[in-house]
Image (cartoon, rainbow, N blue to C red; front, top):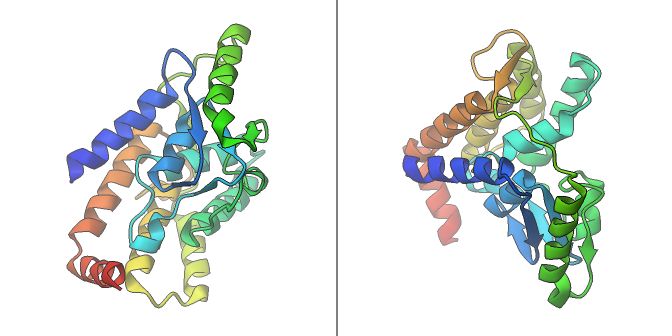
Amino acid sequence: MQKRFEDLQKLSQRIKYALKPITVAAFADSLGYGHSIALHSASVCLAAETRIGLDEIAYGLIPIGGGAKELYLKSTLGASGDAELFTRLRAVYEKLSSCKIANNALLAKRIGYVSDKSPVVRDRDRLIETAKQNTLKMIADKSITAIRKDQNIRVLGGSAYNALMEDLNAKNEAHSARKSAMLKLARVLTGGDLNQPNNVSEQYMSELELDALMTLCRDDENVRQLSNAWTG
C-alpha cells in the first residue's frame, strides 16, 4: 500500500516537472486522484459537464498523490503575508474537509479547482483535440518556464493548526473516520510538527502526506467504519 501511494506521488511530480507541458483532458467524474493529476498538469481542458474535486475525506483518507499540497500551493501564491496566507489556508481546508465538488467546469473555475484560463469544451468529442492544440500552443509560445524542483512552500505551523482545530470542533463532526482524516489533513497543510511559520519543500509535504495516509490505513476503527460505509 505504501509503495502505491509513493508511486502516485512520484507520478504527480513527474507530470508537474515534465520537460514538455502536459495537458489533462478532464470529463465526467474527475474526482480524487483524477483531480490531483489535473492540479499538477501544465493546463487542463474540461468538458462542460465535468465534476471535479478531491473527495477522499468522505472515505476517511486525505487527498492522494499530492492533491492537497498542490491545491494549497496554487491557492496561496501571491499571499501578501501570513495573515492573508492563513485566510487562504482556511478556505482550502474548508473545501477539502467538506469534500466540495464542482459539478461543472464553470464552477470548477469559480472555486479555484482549475485555472480561469482552462478551456471548456461543450462538445466532448472535441475534448482531446482541444487539449492537444492547447499543448502545442504552449510549446510554440514557450509559455511554460522551468520551475525549480526544490520549490519552497510557506506553512504556518502550530498556531494555524490550532485555529483549524477550533473550526473543526465547532462543526461537531460525529463521523470519527472523517474526523481522523480532517485532523491529518490539517497537520499536513500546516507543516506537521513545526511550531512556527516556515518554508518547507514539496518533498517534506509529500512525506507528511504519506505518513498521514499510512496512519489512517492502519487504524482498525477507521478501516471498520470505512468498510461499513462502502458496504452500505
